Image (cartoon, rainbow, N blue to C red; front, side, top):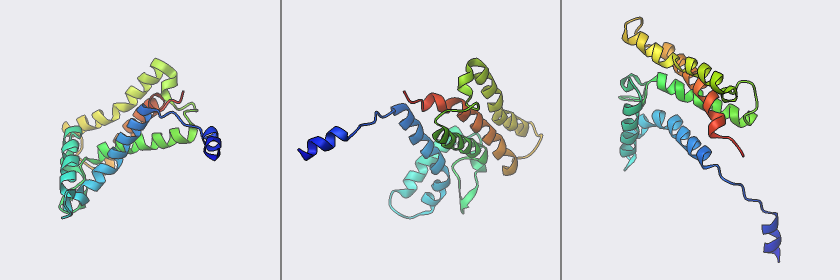
Length: 168
């Protein structure tokens, strides 16, 4: 009898698997690159192998993985600060989405093609800064590349978070 009463009051929430997968991947992108140097430096069984996996992924997504911060000498972060700035922007927008439940004028997906165009223009900060560096306008500097990555991450997040985490 007691179990029947408890089950009657218990409500199951439907899991939004797209939202869960997006949060899982974002957590990996936030924690993986800065943890990789410490895992690589440890002598504990399997941890350097996990670091190798993180470095492998960083080498395939980051255009300049050798420019990462040296967190545990001689090991560096798995990505450069431009890429980590982008991830930080995504994290900030995910937290903002959690606080606002997707309500607000700043979520760009509600403006359809205009929002997509505005987000695309802002997302060009990353490749334009990289191109300026490649063409010799300035050298790599973490204080320069991080804000450009952050702008790109904020633009991407302000457009994509309502799409990924929409509650029906």
